[in-house]
Length: 297
Image 1 (cartoon, rainbow, N blue to C red):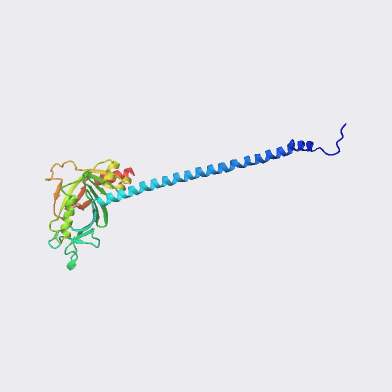
Image 2: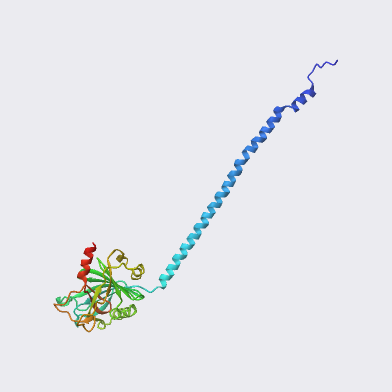
């Protein structure tokens, strides 16, 4: 029989080696390392996604900036190669006299020409005048007529050969009368000759009367016609087409009559000067038109 008086070293080593406490502690430390690793991985992935998104937005903004810059440069190129637009102010004598012929004067702006009557206001004699402001393009003329304080716009488009009359209350449209409206090249040539000092004797300011009739009922103008005549104001105003009336039993030599001014002449509805003759427009059924508008209102 053997008696052990001291603790057995073998047994303690075995107990320490087989102790589950040490083993569990080691496993716990390893688990802590594994738990902290995933958050670092996801943060790195999130930063990568954010950087890619930021680069995509920057690339998109650069592309949009390039497209807009290209469009602006293209429009500037077209504008620089477009025909120059002229603005002209005029005063036309309603009673032509030798001392009241047209003359041209250069305004403060080189692009602005003013033609007025020689002798107007000299010696206390007032000359009856028609005031106009003209905007002339390569194939387009816009004329603002100031007739006794009443403003009316005449718009001539030579591409579609149409004329628009824009009044404060209504609009009219009719075919362009080439015998009364000078094309822009000829009109600008006359302006240049006047600006060079030539007297205005070459301008025909005789008065011509046009008898026209408005088509009833009114019809809304097409969008293409309004765009061509740049008459956006007519979208919300009554609009009518003008045409020559039916021939009278005893017709005059023509619908247009060159005449001198007299005290018993009929009052014109619209008047304009477009480089050749002073055109007076008489709408024969204006009373019927006004009655129609009252009934529609």
